[in-house]
Amino acid sequence: MSNVQNAVFAGGCFWCMQADFDKINGVIKTTAGYIGGTQPNPTYAFVSSGRSNYVEAIKVIYDPNKITYNRLLYYFWHNVDPTRDDGQFCDAGRQYAPRIFYVN
Image (tube, rainbow, N blue to C red; front, side):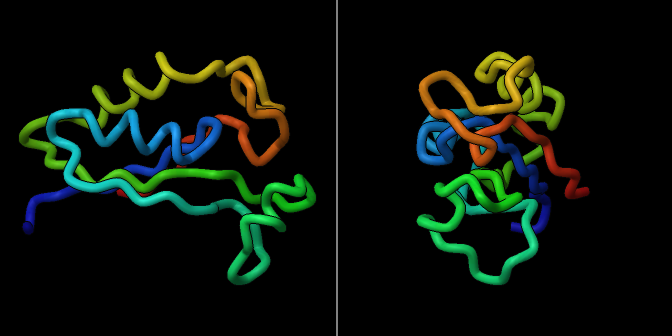
């Protein structure tokens, strides 16, 4: 597929975000991972300790002919609490802070 775009969002548990974004029409694929830190190959144990600068995030590959980036942002903002920098909902810790990472 040649006309796809990428977006990266962090907003709590990446598995919860991934499950929600997978249901959106126009989203082709999501991948859970870590972003924002400097240590190579971070592990779940390292990130979940809260001692890293990494956050749990998802990469969203989407078809811009079916859904716009703005619509993905709208969905993101309605599924996080942007006033909290120490986690989201029942997930506590900096690794669960809401973030948007610029891709293209």
